[in-house]
Amino acid sequence: MRQISLQGHRGARGLLPENTLPSLIKPFEYGMHGIEFDVQLSKDDQVVIYHDLRLKSGITRNSSNNWVHKSGPAVRSLNLKQLKSYKLGRINKNTAYGLRFRKQTALPDQTIPTLYELVEYLDQRNLNNALLNIEIKHSPIAPDLCPDPVYLAEIIVNEINKLNISKRCIVQSFNWSVIQAVKRMDSALTISCLTTIDPVLDTLSPGKKRASLWNAGLDIRDFDNCVVDMVAEFGADYWAPNYINLTKPWIKAAHDRNLRVMTWTVNHLPTMIRIMNWRIDAIISDYPDKLAAASSQWKSTFAQ
Image 1 (cartoon, rainbow, N blue to C red):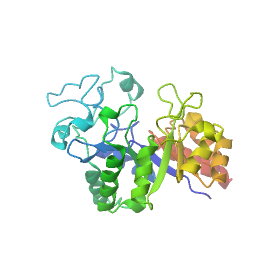
Image 2 (image 1 turned 180 degrees about the vertical axis):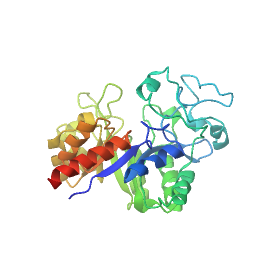
Image 3 (image 1 turned 120 degrees about the horizontal axis):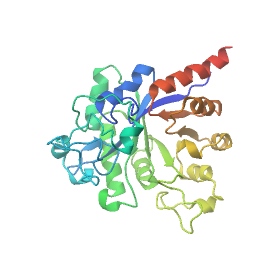
Image 4 (image 1 turned 135 degrees about the vertical axis):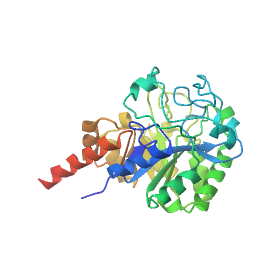
């Protein structure tokens, strides 16, 4: 039976506060193969694990135990010591995010972890072979919040190699310029091109009159609006689309171009099973418990 890589999103965001160390090991309790999480640089160039480019109100509290303002300070504007003064571990359930994840279990106060701390934490729990799907956060439409893409890639690739985790990593980003720089620095690293077309973000811009800023100078119109052909031309190992943009024919087209397909963030059990039947290569979910159940049900259909 073919293997589908099962991964927890930001650890186990549906169960525990995102991108905290306890959340990042939670998926392995459910037999997940790996974890997806986000990295960026502090002011003093430490590789920290945090999703938003600014500290997010509703999940982050300051040293006075107050929620940070709606437009919190940029992660890049604070050194590691300053970032460590902020608290994670519970959510403000009066926010839209809090209502969405209202069943999330609170934790005692947590701090923003570094990649080094995560690897050490996993090693201490005999999880030193776990797959690490590292998303590098960088936005070409918010350059004031981000370091130079090549510089960012250099720091992160050096950290990956220093920690000796390159053989169990996937490195991905919505900003393909970052991934391009990663591949140039270490051609052995497995890379993944993230894409989405949704009401919040469109990284492909097929209907626009100019190339998207997210695709390292490639223009989807030059590929007859075929994202698979564009990702293959780019030279990625994985195409990682938003699941709402995914169809069975798109997966077949990707496989025909020797691309693996890894989709996110699938939280509905019947949808998980349907996508597994489409011959997906990897699924990322906020709910590793549901993903484990879906995998078990999917496998049971082959045993009958």
